[in-house]
Structure formats: structure tokens, C-alpha cells
Image (cartoon, rainbow, N blue to C red; front, side):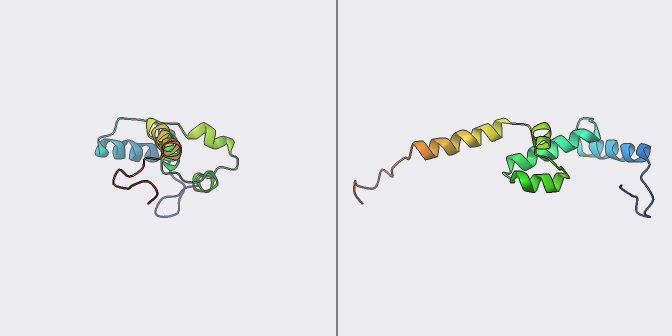
Length: 100
């Protein structure tokens, strides 16, 4: 349970209003507070945070939650392609002579 500065339970209307005010102040389109969980989970994926660590941060008890909340983005697929390409296609330094 989340509380205010005085330890009282948050009022859901107040919480939603604060969320909407934050979005407006940041110049971000309106969205549900729950959408921020998907964004946070996807950011953890983009950063390469291990699934077990992401589970701890997000409060998940099962790995199936990662599949639900983490979304594959072009950043993720691009990183995978770059890493596989670097593994398969090692580019030799043009200044080196063979055998050195």
C-alpha cells in the first residue's frame, strides 16, 4: 500500500490527478498510470537488466509477468542483430597484415 507524506492511504482520485499533472508538466500525452509499468518494464529490457533483477524491481513473482509487461522494441532487435553480426562477421583491422 502506498501512502502520502503523513502515512495515510493515497486517495485514488488525488493519485490520478497528480499522475495527470506530471504528464502534462512533462509534455507527455495522457495515459493510464498502469501504462507506466509497461514502459518501466520495457526500459529495463532495453537496458539489458537480467530478468531476475527486473522481477525484483517490478515486484513480479513469476517470469510470465516479464512476457506480459516487457515489449520488444526496435532498439532491442537492433541490439540483438548488432551483437549476432559482431559474433559472426568479425571485421579485421585493415592496417594489420595477416598473422600479426
